[in-house]
Length: 302
Image 1 (spheres, helix red, strand yellow):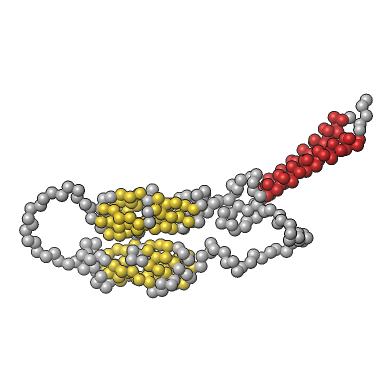
Image 2 (cartoon, rainbow, N blue to C red):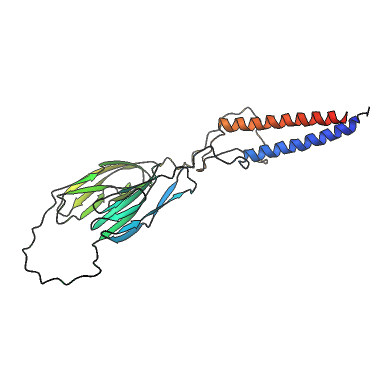
């Protein structure tokens, strides 16, 4: 029977154990840095949507395809809802295809599943006849009667936005065949909410403002807009509270122990339960392999 060289076997076992230990440490470090297991446990949230073109002029009967670009591009939910501020002027379908209906201006709004919005201003001109035909000399006709606006309504009558959000209002003018449908928009507090000539509003800061739309003959409608503080933006003056720890604090010269965070908005979130179990299972498996390899090395030497 061959004798066991204890010192040689011990050295080999120590070398093998050291190599396996280095592999385990490297695996654990890469796992903690998120380089081995790709981030697939949390939804990627849309942070911005941009509609192109941002403005366009088309003729009655014409069509235009709008494109909504999401940021980040790998957002989990890419659903876009399209709406028009005035469907009598322009309509839009679920794919962002705009159809010009009548002369006027409409705001086409793209809204993401988490409320992010972007707007394209569509101006509709009268249809152009490419081959006009001569018309007979018109006979004198009586001057048409001016049809005044009798009322105007705004929808919605109240909105709640966050800072830097944009939105728009729809209006209904009665009668629908009124001669002059021109309106003007104004804000009671432009430092809180701005409104442009198309009824598109921009929330500037926390507060409340009244938006008024007025016809050329003095008919008005009003809506209230409340602006809340943007909760998506972290206040840099607020330091996150540190939970008390029983472990000894590491020297500041050392690199902080890597953590596995998965929120693309850079808000730190701890490992979830499934990830922790995966890491523990991997470590236990490696320890089991170390024991098995050591057992077979010693057994083969005997």
